[in-house]
Length: 363
Ligand code: HEC
Ligand code: HEC
Image (tube, rainbow, N blue to C red; front, side, top):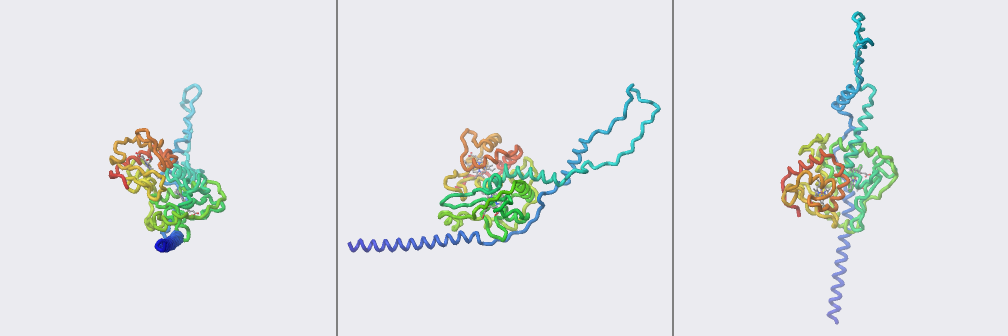
């Protein structure tokens, strides 16, 4: 009996010590995960126009278009009889001073219209901002899970509850490509996914976002459940601000839209978050446990060796493999975007992923 009591006592002490240790650890984790958002970061300060003006080539093309549309000069009048009077001298028309066919055309309005159309395609087919910021940009959900926590995409419309209405190009750059809020505080915005975005693309996206009506909506700041607290504290879900190079220059313009490895590589930036930087796939870094591992999409025999371009198109537009089997989540989250990619975009993406080094699937 005494022996049992003794064991019971030690057991009790052990449990108490473990609880204290766990409590301390959890206390540390809560502090640490909160502190990660308090840490201040500095990044370079960029500037770019919103919107980008028309280029000289665009203006020249427009001028040519207008010239071609302008009515032909009247041919010399022919008498009803069909005879040209021999004597009557044809009055020599004064050569008209060349009128610029672009006179009266509002080039600024046209630049805005084009930027908005480009921004719309970027958001709808490629950069997926609406996945977390809501279809009308008034706010949305990135993660809402009792164990992990709640990370909401803030309202970007400029209405009440939105911070961005007066933001400069530099502030947008810091939020979107660096994961930093004004003042230097780290944000949960997944900025590492947007490292290849050029200034012009970001400018176009801002123009598109600003074309939406202002909505009043205040989203809650990030909060963590028990698992999220521990994962954040242990650095298992690192914030972008701690990962990206804050001094690296961003390209001013995206590569030319063409079936090239260069343009394909630019497009493939959004695939790397799940398929990894070298496309060998494997469990999605930081993904929830119910997500399937990402497929190997290198030309390796574990990957897309044996696929034709048409198989790739069906995968991207209909979420099916060549054997007819359906792709699962989270690839299916991509369907609403990849289905809107143009033929040239899909061709370039295919050209690029066919050119990467074949690798066995990641673990
Ligand atoms: C996977 C989800 C996700 C995607 C995709 C995403 N964002 Fe975010 N974004 C967030 C979250 C979450 C925050 C807020 C983080 C915080 O409060 O710490 C945020 C913050 C921002 C902010 C700062 C706004 C503010 O008030 O703090 C801007 C601007 C922004 N995102 C723009 C964009 C743009 C533009 C895109 C597309 C190119 C985009 N986001 C794509 C999740 C996302
Ligand atoms: C949110 C994560 C995520 C993103 C982003 C993503 N994928 Fe996937 N992808 C997956 C997952 C997971 C699978 C495996 C689905 C399955 O097994 O059913 C997959 C499967 C595929 C397949 C099918 C290959 C096969 O045989 O299983 C192709 C092709 C593919 N992805 C291409 C792309 C391309 C190209 C991009 C970028 C435009 C992209 N994915 C972006 C997660 C993602």
